[in-house]
Length: 263
View: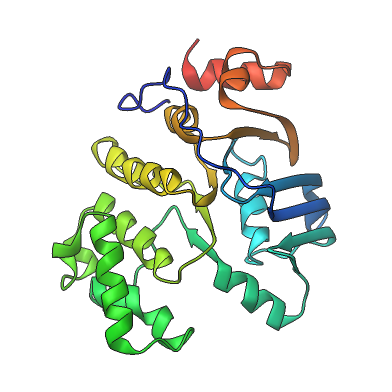
């Protein structure tokens, strides 16, 4: 269901989208055993572009974005991120993961670490950032997601919406060039969804390249440059939001929108 807190008639802000390619996927296929989960995926994402990926459960949406940073391995085709080919070469995988932030449906915070420690762990250990510098950056991003006062608490002391904003801040601490969101609001209570979507909208307004798997169609209409509809492992349709929602071409897209938007 669309988020009622976002005006679906608002035209998305026309932030700058670069000619530079951030992600290039060519003829990509993936199988789980004999199950063909992704079929002949071709997708070009430009720097600064904000893409929302939607579709029914089991359509391959989450698998697609998880392939971009090698959380899932594709068996056929090419994925390039920032010009680096994603292969079995661990150096390439590490390079890509250092440029790509990921925010999951479940927050994956370390319960025994404070919020500040959760945010500084990767910069200190992966990027070898000095602790004081990492803490300053963490506080900057906790301020950006509007919860700097929670820095010394533990995840269990925060609401679900606050924990998801910590997860976003933690990703930002690695200073990624691309952010992937995998249904970031689906585990939240309705009243907590808006605070997370507001954080994501702010990121979009700052020009972050984003791929977001979500059922929040109000968010798609407010923020996306492009909406992609997937079904049965394929990209069925993609278009800018106004055209996608008002004039869907595929019967499968029309059925999906009628079910999710209720008309």
